[in-house]
Image 1 (cartoon, rainbow, N blue to C red):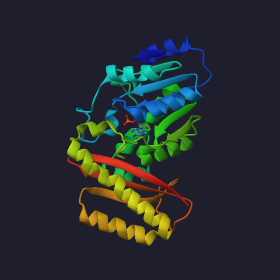
Image 2 (tube, rainbow, N blue to C red; image 1 turned 90 degrees about the horizontal axis):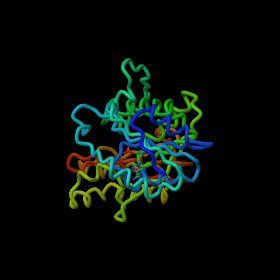
Image 3 (spheres, rainbow, N blue to C red; image 1 turned 90 degrees about the vertical axis):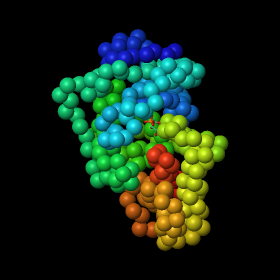
Image 4 (cartoon, rainbow, N blue to C red; image 1 turned 60 degrees about the vertical axis):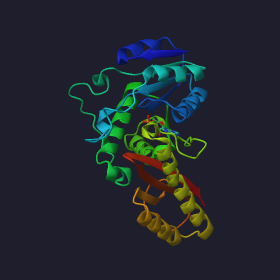
Length: 280
Ligand code: AMP
């Protein structure tokens, strides 16, 4: 039960013919893998209608980033979705950017201070683009539930807080990171990597694991911060490794309740992202 809509008009038409109580939204940029599909499967369980959007959002890419070469694989994406679509799924994949950003679009949203740390420091303006497109998608589809991967942890927290600030009714759900057997977090950008580079990328998760064990063992921040400093000094491929409060992304004063360790590791020109949550 798969439907394809290229315009909002087409979407409305299809939707009007599907009996449903709730709508689940899965925003993506396409080139779907098991991570994306895990979000869809959760939506299929919880909603009678699921909407997967496939839109490579220009406003979240900076100058010189990979907007032009980002993989666009709609046919293959539809096949992946069809295999799991046990209830109706509408794929919204606009050809024309104006469906999302009509002329005179005035719905820009700021991600605020938290949008300028970690990924936001490396990619200025990135999160403003992310929250803007998500707000627009929420306005178009008015989902009851929306599904995001915690693989992009900072993005998930920012979307949650935007939804609260804007007093939107959508329930924002964060789901676990899906990984390759090697431990590497799945990402569409992994396709840019050669096998040897993928191997090198494993260092990110391994290092986050080391920081996690020290936190668990010592229950103190200092030894973990010393380890982070050492790892970053000895391997310049780390753009950052940071320990943050899992809810607010602020610097924790001590090791208690929930903490997240986030990292960005550069292999060739590809910035790999990963994180581990730690509960105390
Ligand atoms: P993207 O197409 O990269 O914008 O991702 C669309 C959604 O899929 C976002 O909510 C991502 O966080 C999520 N996602 C991407 N990779 C993974 C993964 N390995 N595991 C779980 N969710 C993921």
